[in-house]
Length: 346
Image 1 (tube, rainbow, N blue to C red):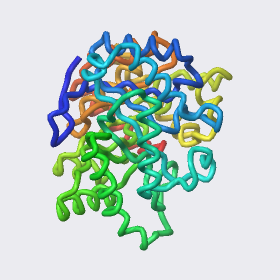
Image 2: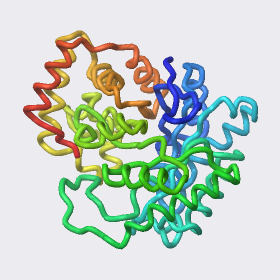
Image 3: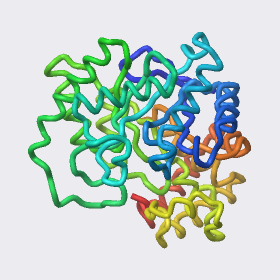
């Protein structure tokens, strides 16, 4: 396992991060513990979760992912917990998730309540990295290519949010902060306000990045490289699409069948691009999973790649894929497919 540090910190993290959004829905507590044990055995020390998980959650199971991680942290003990970097996220506005709290916003009250609940669920005294799962303001994300409405009044909230996080850091409840599903404007505003007012600085951004979605390269990659904000790349396999299994149809047990709202991956261009990438991988004696993971891992702006699995076999394959290195020639062929079918899953 290779390691790096969260930018602007001395926090050592593995370049592979264990994603946990299936814990509590697709995976039982025992299965979650087995995945966590195996990940640590393989050298992973970085675990990412969110208050809203598991994915596909509802008022009955939300928070169970954190609770499953919490029972595991309790089991391994404080000394082993301190060797780990645990990240979680506060949910942003979503009319379908008001069972989490009302209102779902980034007010001082909401952030404080969210942190306290996550600390309780995770059975820990502190959170190493606390992230905003998606922005509170209206923006183009999750299948939106453009943006017509801009909430100008929200511009003052960046500073207010940083003040709240400053207080929580001083209390020792969180160590560092990051954003997720953010755009170039949001990243720069947070950095600007931090520098101007001597407030905590965002150290990471958790955004999607894969062969099917390279929009991060448009604007964000240069900003985060130059400003030293680490990308925690999620969905490196495009919600499982880049395993190639969906090319033969969506089976009832597949994640895409269980969560049909993720339509960004089920358009015609996604199928076409995935088929081309699969053929390219096989021509180079690689699995599509190996090529897709290795491509993400090789990018200079990627600090750590978040992987997830529903079985230990999948988790093993995903971790092993990071031992693969792609040649310049193969990367050139990947670029040809990107030019032909650019970013089919925004």
